[in-house]
Length: 384
Ligand SMILES: [Zn+2]
Ligand SMILES: [Zn+2]
Image 1 (spheres, rainbow, N blue to C red):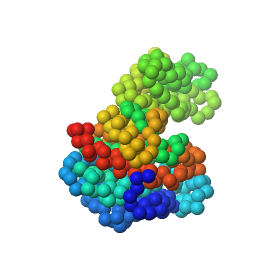
Image 2 (cartoon, protein in one colour; image 1 turned 120 degrees about the horizontal axis):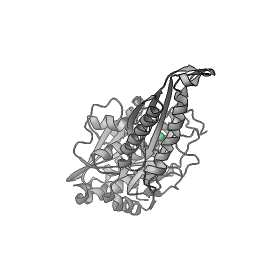
Image 3 (cartoon, helix red, strand yellow; image 1 turned 90 degrees about the horizontal axis):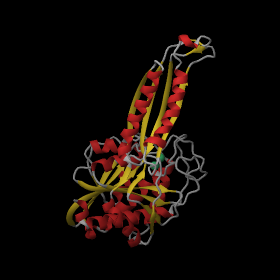
Image 4 (cartoon, rainbow, N blue to C red; image 1 turned 180 degrees about the vertical axis):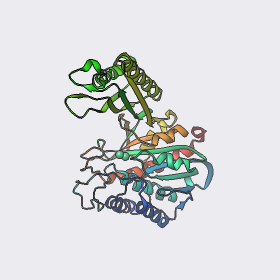
């Protein structure tokens, strides 16, 4: 344990429990922001003046000049009714910190406090972004648009990982979390009598063929070593038994770990949908909504991401990829970044109403990001 601030762990536990009891949804984190501000001010940490409705940015300037790096914690909760049974369960019914962003927030406050106490070792500046609205994938864009990345050379972040033991940090170069895109597809045929289908153009038959054909994209068009998911999650058409409807509406999602495959998949889907619809004399309207890029870890930080774990007395392991999305990916499209898993040894996965984590991990994360920041700023050649 490399903590040097007295009673840090008990302080972080109380912060985390207070946040857990008072969860707020994306862009509604007003009380959360007030609390973070208060706790940072109590520790004498500088808060920067950005025009943020919710969320906030703090900064620790080292005694020596150098580049600026950023640490990021997300602060929002989910619309889930808590069933964890912990004594500090949510007081806001139907809202829960079921993704552990209360853990991320309090850990990064811990890192801020530790960094503040080690300013003499810091060769540059550490900016800490407490970001709103991760769960609705809008917060990273929101804060970036307000200039918080200006002058920042690299960004680091984490997600808690219930599957990893406390004191274990999952590190991986390249893609860690998937891109998330959404599509909508309308098949417009010709409605008619169910008994006289030859006078109609049945969009349900056409939609069925398209759903099957979509599955061939992964098996026939994509590199077999790439992990890709194409899921049709909605297929709506018709409202009774004896009428062929005019239209079928489909919706779904695509997940990949390769940024370059995203567009290709969208274009293949469009081509299949339009081609199949046309061959039946119908029309397809395909709409593609890019949602989240791949969380793509910059190789140059892999070594210090492991080294920070060792210096702090913890263990780095190879991180497993997860086909969920994270809006940290947006920062990585602007500046190089690295995202790690922080072991919290919980019984349930993210977004589960019984989600829990081991609070010993608060201090681990605080120590880890303190060491990582100091190491990164000690290697300015990585920050060019
Ligand atoms: Zn989540
Ligand atoms: Zn999360």
